[in-house]
Image (cartoon, rainbow, N blue to C red; front, side, top):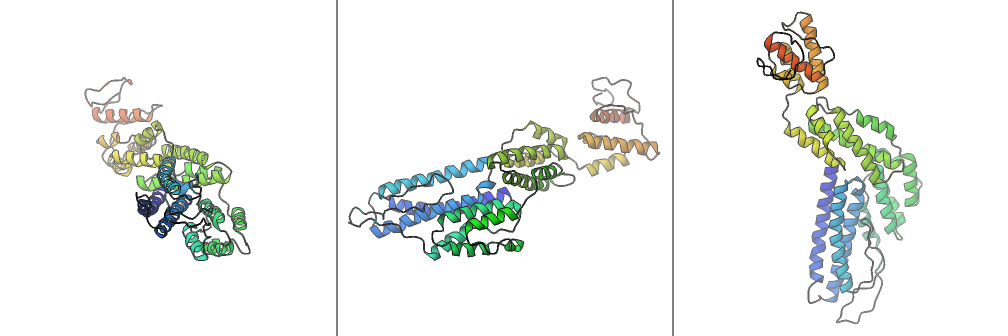
Length: 391
């Protein structure tokens, strides 16, 4: 799943929980407190939706970029602040975790009502059905691929922290989430920790060197900007996971893989103009790289190489298409092919000597020669009065 799709799913799911949370918050935050049973009902909703949000964040957090992590942290802090207000008002002896992915599982006093003399009591543990419902939402499917392993392990860590006396149920649920060849990875493990250790030892990814080489050799060629961006994004995610598997923190892994992605785009994009734009940019996340590349591609209206190359070869007196050959390597190939065809007598044109001129200058001299039908004398800088080109 791409970063954009993952982020959209996270926003959608957490927004649904936020709406339910706010409804119960409003009921409990009224000037006149509701009846005791109503307080208990809404209090449970607040805790449940807080935990649902924490679960959704835990599943996606390692795959978010820096900006998305800040956004979701600010969003969740609002929820925690409101929950703190209600805890104080209703004298709930429960700690709200600072960590984004921690659940509220500690014991706390039963919500008190000023008009009642109810005694304090501890929160009842989750029933098996409640645990199954929570765990099923928490654990994603795992297909055995290395790039999806860390997300699955994070979910198991969170599941291990809330299992209470339901570990056997948890083991069964985990097995139902293993799909394809992943189902054969575990067999006799009886604890969540044992399953994590088995998966870590059996599921291996490529080395950072191999993945880096693959990313740097991801070429655009005739691909559309969107398709090329997708290939870059997928290869960068693989590299980020490879860094994490070798012990780097998620933050460093994201930083290193993002910089490699920038190099790959600069090296392998087909447009020389886009290469210059990307070289001038400063990027702190993969999302910024992809967004800048696609925006730049949509703003530059370039004729595909196959079109203008064909026109130049079939109509050597047309220089408009040659001007569009801004990328140095492509321009050089075009000129060499024209020279070959001119030498073989397939086209009638005067071709200037190339020598060691830079590619773009070769194009300029070629255009000048075609228009004036004369070879340029010396490379004099200025605008030619005849063909209006720089030479």
